[in-house]
Length: 243
Ligand SMILES: *Cc1c(COP(=O)(O)O)cnc(C)c1O
Image (cartoon, rainbow, N blue to C red):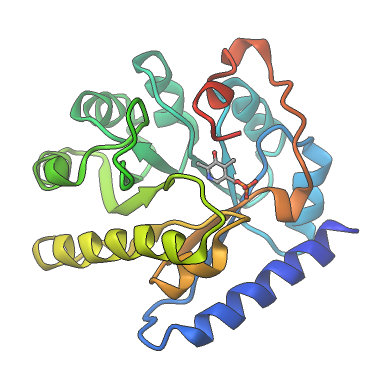
């Protein structure tokens, strides 16, 4: 199947689930997750009209961004972040979804080049309270929001999550509903936030029915990933269970 065909199918799923969510306020943005996939596949999706792309592995992403610098793409960093990655994230990306502590946000803010507009940032929440998983706990979210909001060079856009894996749609929805409630709570204090980044290939419908504004879809656009990644990237996505 062509990538244009797959994109079309995903848009149909987004459309159908959006109609089931009566309270939906924003059109849902599709983020095409191109990690591990070759440049020509990104080009193919771009030619079909796709503008937002998500990457997890920093060196691989930087190579792609440099190669495709002529295209009008918005690049989103969605992988785990250690301190040694913040400079390149600040330099190369339009968005970062996976910030879960102040130290990382501060580094990205101070390393953002002066000629670029503030980076769009979502804070990752550990919504299923999984041990050893990325994300700020719901209890500590507000404090982090307050601190990040005060940083220069960052435009705080909202929240992101990767809930515990389950095939049970009710369980999927209950995690996403918790996120939606947290998002609404924060919105009373931070009226400018507009992004709830949740939903992947296997749970797109549940996420949109609970109020997602941005779904991150890899497999259902580009096909299955093989797990071999650039050795410069330490396989961290694999260790994190997100690849
Ligand atoms: C890989 C990844 C996705 C896409 O997952 P699929 O199941 O392939 O759609 C979305 N979000 C994050 C954070 C990822 O790491």
